[in-house]
Length: 177
Image: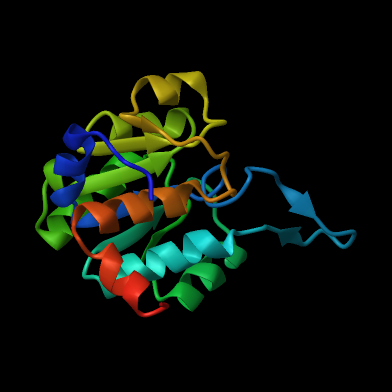
């Protein structure tokens, strides 16, 4: 397990909500289409497992994405994620409404994004994160830049960090030893 600086661990201890972008974070950001025009996406199963463990540990997980996709709705439903907001070009408005609905503040939110549309939330949340192949402007507003690209397990790294900081990772690990 990666050793994180004390400053990061202290922030992660307070996190009650993890919000993730989809395209470029939970996927590689590519738009793939079949010959008949259907869109397809590749998700990383490790990211999904991390999100599931967060929720099982009492941490809320939400999705805020600028695009709308049946595939995203189905994937998030299969993971049991109830807070799924698609077609949100103004992510900050959705972010503020979600915080209010869950009665939490910026100091309790982690966010992982990859592009300019994510910057308003990256600038406000306590734990702003990006993937390795994020746009440089998004990276400028992140406290953590994970070493993996979007769709390659960066979201899982965030999940593991939070579970580790809150002493919730070892009980999960114990189930598999």
